[in-house]
Image (cartoon, rainbow, N blue to C red):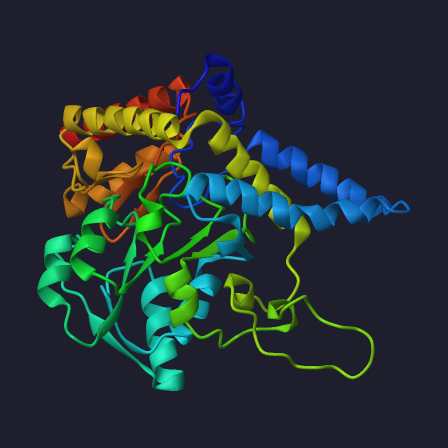
Length: 380
């Protein structure tokens, strides 16, 4: 989609964080639109004028419409979730057969799979061997078996920023279910979401919608194949009745069955505002800007001889850049970044940078200062 200069300017004006923040893969500071939405809704809730709270009942439809525009799923196949893990738990507990998943994925996927297998004994977990930590269509093809009913993968690997080839994986798994944790890519990766049968994601990272925001999208095939084990009174046809004895009806045959209770409408509004921001500017435009920012960090890492261990080709990476200094220099690098107020994630002997489309020039100047000090301390 074509992005107008006004739309892009409005999107970039929504970044409010202090300079030096390069840690969106951990948590995204709230956007201006999300902050305004939260404040308005909190004011509405605090006043509770006659009839005013009814507007909150429209947030579910608004959220679904915005999510549908971004994901390419029909709105009635998307439901709000408080986080990624809840959506994945709903999915894994309802699966039968076996699921192929790498044990190097972010814990949400392995925990959901193993807990489901332990509790119901209807699911078997097979650990997917990766290509140097990367899930590829080739490795999936090599390891699927006749009893594999589902393959689960992260859209973007949280350790390396590698972007999974959803179309390629879909081609090799046939009609098996493809389950995707999209949290590290939603809003910044122009992905082939319709290739997946299940998309679970949270909005507190790149979407900048805050904690407590998430979604679960399911294809018709997934709705038919996954049993809604945890299905509450909001997951029945027409919703609950309040006219006498409670009738515990069967779950509705839709993604709505994978809900337990009423959602937090303010969280829905925050997520809707964040999704609408991305839809307005176009996720392809956001992806290009994020790629440019990541490339600048790669160039700085090369300039200061910091080994880049995340993918370099633009089509293979999202907004994550990982460097791995010599083990005896990691503390020095982390200290200089902290001294220059540069926010990053230091974990497992590596430093993870994750800039966004709105990362300001001053942030790169601060990073340059930190790396210059680091190089000086190394030389000394």
